[in-house]
Image (cartoon, rainbow, N blue to C red):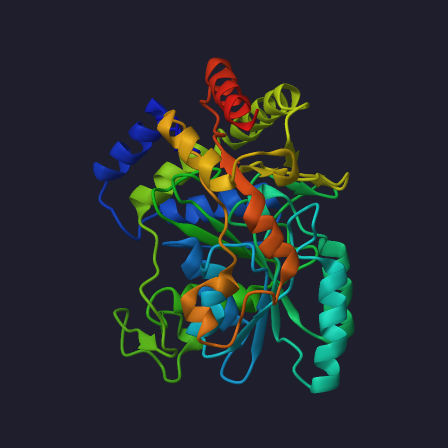
Length: 385
């Protein structure tokens, strides 16, 4: 089976983890802050907070920005459920903004229209989370302009997008947002097995997230309500969580980060090969605006159903039988049963629902060979034609 994606582990990566296993620290040692500093330097932020998943990073980002009961969080319906669940964890209401039919990211036009309506109803969001789907940046300048006009915070869900760029800056620099979050799941751009990161330019947000990831506890006398009893002293000043990353995971991430540019470049080479081979096939690729340089976490195409005699399911199952691990990203979040209990219904967001009917994810990862790409394309054209 050719998977749709997979991790790329080198001997250097293995040795980095072994070195930690032979060190005095396995969990909260020196490698976590080294990894944080390396990621912050890479994307161009002052602060980075490592956690045990991208979902945890989203949750802490919402809490750091004060999201709570009665507030509204808006995100894209074309994402994994975590982008919306982080708002529910905080007791907030969640809503969605439909996608652009060409980039498959949150539509800035749809966001502007929804904000106008929400202002009249006095239901403006406190936080908007644009999702850089498949590694392609959203229109962050446009979203930031709306954030200034309507007074909401912006969290970039860049779990797909480490190594991508927007307007020449690396995604994650927070030029147009308050916080950006990354994921280091095995299929992502780099991996820590499981893990995530929140980056920001604002010291108070980083400090809050650092405290919340470790039970809300501080050992900083400057944050305590009384003078410490001694060098052992700590205080819990927030209700936090155990969202910490280990030194073993950080060591893997730090090693992987040295190959990130190589990984992204290789993904572009494979993507261009797909584009060349599929130029006459009944598929549509995600549009790549000039301001964007995608990390190409996923290779999603839309099947042109009006040119096909088979359904998407038939194509999917045929390719799976051919040992090609195609997938679908994503089932629109508002169509999940849990969200339908909140009142969301089919038809609420027509662009993402139309996208979902046609979408299929093809294999794309750095180790994918030219021969494998030809095999995938040949089998795909065979079933499409």
